[in-house]
Image 1 (tube, rainbow, N blue to C red):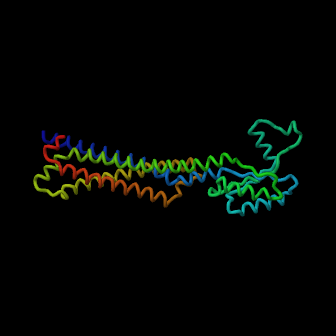
Image 2 (image 1 turned 90 degrees about the vertical axis):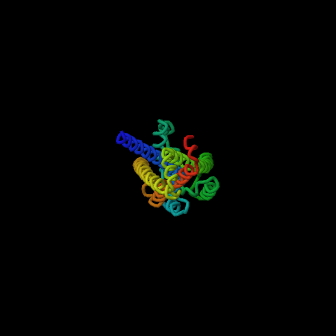
Image 3 (image 1 turned 180 degrees about the horizontal axis):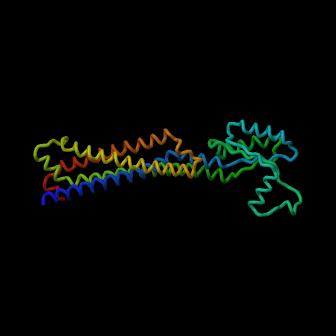
Length: 292
C-alpha cells in the first residue's frame, strides 16, 4: 500500500515539475519573440524606408556619357544607398507590363524620359531631408523633374514612430505578464508541498535550510525551461532567415547573444525570486491556515 502511494506521489511530483517547465518555457519563448521584435524594430523600419525612391528625370538632349557621370556623382553622395538608371525604353516596357497597354502604338513615339532612381539610406528618408535633396537636384542642368511619393514618406515617418512606441509598451507589458505567469506556476508547485514545509519547520529546521532545496529545484526547472525556450526561438530565427534573408537576422551575433542570455538569466532570476517569496509565505503561516 505504502509502495503504491509512493509511486503515486512520484508521478504527481514529476507531473508538477513538467507543468512548471512547460509554463516557464512557453512564457519565456513568447517573451523572446517580443524581445526579438524589439531588437529588430530599427532594422525592419530601415528596410521599409529604403524601399522609397527619388526619381530624377533627365532631359532628352543629355548624352549617355553625361548621364553616367551624373550617376557616379549620385553614388558618391552620403545619402545614397543605391541608384539605378532606367532608360525610356525600359520605362515604356514597365508601363506596358503594369497596365497592359502599349501607348507607343497609337502615339507613334515614346514620350517618356530616361531617369535615375535613387534609393536613400534610412536616416535620410524623412519629409525634410528628401525635400532638401529634391531642391538640390532641381537646380541641376541635366534634370527636368524630380519626383517621389511625398504622402507616402510622411505617412511612413509618422507610422514608424507610432509602431516603435507601441512595441516598446507591448514589450513592457509582456515582461510583466511573463513574471506573473511564472510566479503563479512556481507558487502552485510550492503550495502542493506546504505541509512538508511546515513539518520541517516544526521539527526545528531554519527557514534558510527549508528554502534552499526548493530554490535550487526551481532554478533547475527555470534553466530547463529557458533552454527549451531558447531552442524554440532559435528554430524560429532560422526559419525566418530562410524566408526573409534580406534582414540578415541570423548574422546579428551580439544582439542574438544578448537576447538568449537575457532569457536564460530571466528564467533563473524569476524562479529564484518566486520560490523565495512562495516558501516565505508558507513559512509565515500558522498550521491551521495551511488548509485555506
